[in-house]
Every structure is written in C-alpha cells, then in structure tokens.
Length: 124
Image (tube, rainbow, N blue to C red; front, side, top):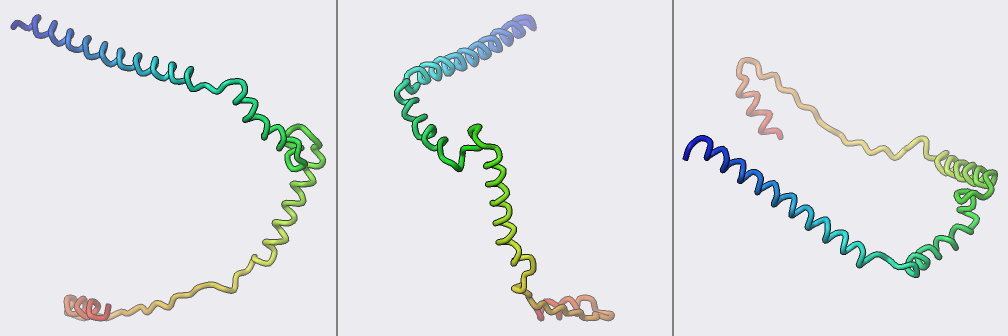
C-alpha cells in the first residue's frame, strides 16, 4: 500500500470507530428515554406522595418554613439556641482529661554510636 492508501484506511477506521461510539450513545439515550416514559409516576402516585407533605406542612413546627408566622419562627429559633447554650454551659471546662505517661530515654552514645543504638533498641 502507498502512503495515501494508509492514510485513507486510517481515516476510514477512525470514522467508523467514532460512528460506532456515537451510535452506542444514541442507543443508550433512547433506552433511558423509553424507561423514563414507562416508569414515570402517574398523577395518582404524585398525589399520594404529596399528601403526607401537605399534612406535615400544617404542623406548628414547620409553619414558619411554609410562609406562616415569622415571629413564631424567630421565637422557636431563639428558644432552641437558649436551650443549647444552657446545656453546653456546664461543659465549658472538662476535668476528665486523659493523660498518658510517656518515658523519654536518652542515652549519650559517646564514641560508639552503634552501641547507643543497640541500647535504645534493647530498651524498647
């Protein structure tokens, strides 16, 4: 084969490879779209999922979050902060600090560094 023949073969293989990759991606996209349509919840399922949320939105704890009384929400936050501070007030100083006693040994090896190293290894 000539140089032009090799170039044409290389371009053909490259184009076929890229086409196969994009074809595979399109097939995966179509499968995802079909599965999304098949398993999409109906209107009755969405209403059943929203019903517990609507009931909990009427509770006094979430009234501020749903556009209720902002003064009540601020009061609830202030009470929560005050209770947390009262609970943490006694725990500012800890008397139960765990202490581990560590013995540090130093050996002056003098002229024999290897002898000192051997002594250190024997002590540990």
